[in-house]
Image (cartoon, rainbow, N blue to C red; front, side, top):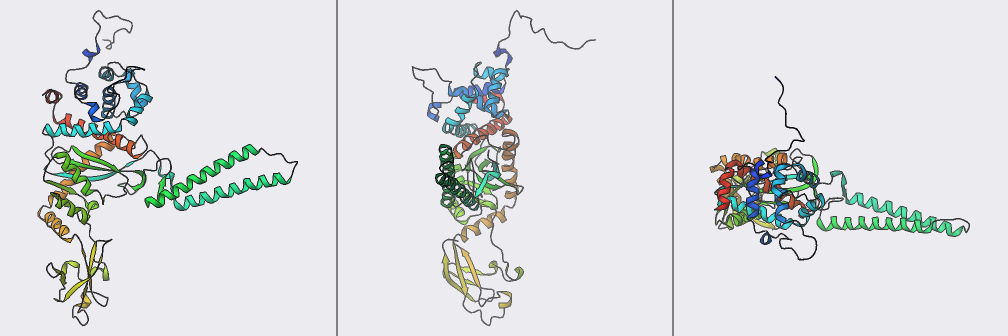
Length: 474
């Protein structure tokens, strides 16, 4: 018995197959086509939806949007690889009607249509919400570091830039000295135009270094990434230093769909809780919202802001601990605060009164008035009297702590919610978890494509292709 053999490459079929016949009715590309065809791309911010009468006709933005969504769903992100897929992939040929744009056109679409791409990512969240896939009862917020195109070895600090300026100044002085020496010796021949060109290049480099130092000073950064100034030196989850961006995500607990995301240049998550929670509340169009986050979001001002806006935060608190005398002295919890008199009572029932307020640290300092001769002083302080600090938002911290005690399971649930999307984004959608573009706005565009693709994959795993078709046609 022989092996199975294919048909001859030169054989002509009496009834040739069309591309339509090669794509099954329940194939995901049919839903991609149906969904994007129904979008109002002009309203979403895409250009070239309406073409001019003169000039060469451009590609329709819907076709390029289909190509990018298909590519990110199948781990094909490079414009050159997408160009190749247009010429060899039957699914892409069907999706684009055999259009084959070149890689420059594909790359320019991602670069120029960032606003529209980010808007269509938000629009798909609304589609999932109306389809009943987003409950909005509990949303987990977390951040993760994604690598930029530039290497961490391209990072330069103020000291390195100062040394570079000094080296450049030394080289400029050397060239000027050579010119002076040539003027003294009339017989010596020197190419003055080449020397002047070299001096011009050195002065440009010196000016660039000075501008970099000024940028570091105004942005209060320790280092800047050459070639990608928006990126920051960040610590990843393994403690390694990378050049990258901080990606914030808010994930709905029901089906782990990403409700809202953002890309920031901050090294930590301390200032992200309130803006993320408010954005989620706006997306879900709810008056009340419950969010959960880890200790990286432990900010009293943000906890108070959430409560003031109808948002109930469950945040693991990161409070300072008692380190005096090895932690053997009375902790702050041993002191009772009286809201009416704005004073504290120590374990010996002695008074601590308000001494001063530090608005930068948002704390008020209270000092003991009768510590001298107190029998419990050796257990209380090694100083002349005891000081206790109270945060401006101490009441919000206390309420959050009470909520965590009452519902201990919610922090374990947090990890199960937020780690799933980040794992998929890093290992499947983005492959090597490194961006292909430079600059914050372009990075936000690429992350919008990645989040859109993740939500799309998640949606297809929850409901069938036929069900999505019915939702789109309804």
